[in-house]
Image 1 (cartoon, rainbow, N blue to C red):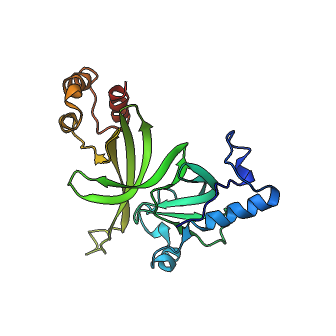
Image 2: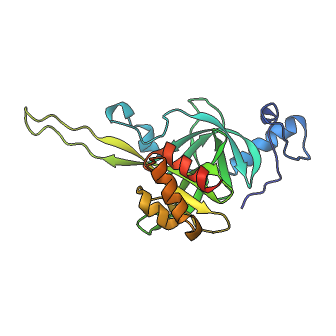
Image 3: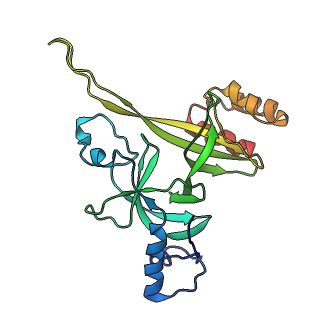
Length: 243
């Protein structure tokens, strides 16, 4: 689908010690990198124009993890393609990207390809297939929290929209429409082609790990008074499982 020849823009060379092999040089390399990035751009869904006209100040919360575009690195098949600016629409689970930080530049959608990833705080955010705790198999974006020797831990950020209600009378105030952010966590055992949601109860997580670790994990959770509803405690648990 993509005609990619392992090209990296020169703007990345000052930021990363490793270089992507290329048979291009100088200005030609910059131009070629920009052309490659274009391969990953596509139209945002049909609500694009409507979203541009939305005044987010009229709502509580936001459909985005951040309303502003932030710089990041685009990778394909673990090779750096170039620098872009991104904004994650967690309501639609869609990454909006631009080539520059200019407010005048129209944003587009990043293609939903499992070989494409963005580096966010040095961790990859990528499109994956996973299984929810309701046994539904779906696609979406997961951010890697920890890559371990036995288990990988992921985070999923999503937003739900709740329509507001007008004031019914002078005693009951209007309820504004709001976007509410949620976080889910997922894990994948090494050499297993399946990513599962982590339930929010300690005893349910124990049932999901290998039999050889069940009793030890139960003791570890109790002795350290951990609750996996807490991200901090959940990370501790997976650091233990990977030790």
